[in-house]
Length: 443
Image 1 (cartoon, rainbow, N blue to C red):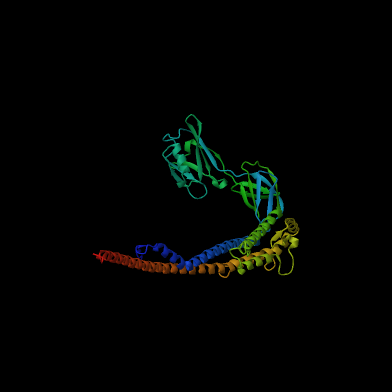
Image 2: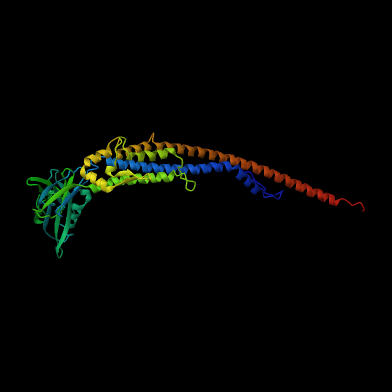
């Protein structure tokens, strides 16, 4: 509880400032704790940032260790209307594709009707049969052409159709209805639900159909859409709508050394970025001291990652273009790597991915060791720093209470002093008045 202070009432001194100076001296220990707290928080931030980068490095290395990671394949088509793409599961090779037909929607065009809001143009109950075995659905309309369009397009009815009233003359319209997706399975009929009669006197029908291609000389493949997923393992082929029957394309699948080299270079760049960050954070120079200067655990992470370039079996990765330079960074000779990969991609993948000797595998092992949720070097350091910050928080809070009590005590002491001096000054003034009123000896 605060105690009132009467600053300078009796002494004429600025006792409030004196108390504040005393408190500054008393708070020196707490200030040192606050300084340590700020330092520890900086350390925690640096450790967390490093942990994120090391975890990202482990993920990148893990991606390169996946089956097919070194099997990047480019797919090309000699015909622009026959697009082709490939995944890493595709194998090098080539084949020809002839377009027999493209996929189209099932569409009906009904006879001309007058107006879109004329009542009685269509039945108030229209039966939709998708002809796929799901059974008919009755659509409720207001008897107008516009009402039927709304009922067909209403998402709540889930018709799987698109309807449009096309103006063909003055207040004359034709209703066009087509399936939302292509393929022979999208066929349907629209009839009067009451008697099964045709709407508006009948319709012109374009039958829906599947796309069809012939691979090689005799292998026929069909698709409800113009996309043939996994036409061959890992290869997807897409036909442009309206591609003329008989259009032929030569599809070539070839390994892509550039894509594989780029993936390895991305890993090397991530390694070097991490090493540079560790160097900055652990720098011990008196002119530029890092936040983690002297942290042996963080330096050990750097050493283990850099050591991944040197296989434990005593071999070298120099023939693959992977080395270290005199600055302690990893260097990738892209030309050398591409040459080695083109000569034997399986052998390159095996050397980089081998559990004990592979560059990629050893990087992942080192990164996983540092970021393991229970025993990781960085995990342990982060946990310890958090605990230190919590202890400092508790100590600073205890000092807040201690300083509050000290301020209260000092305020009481100086208030008592001022009160006593004020009383003494009052007594002195009274005595001086009494003495001045005494008669002199000559009177």
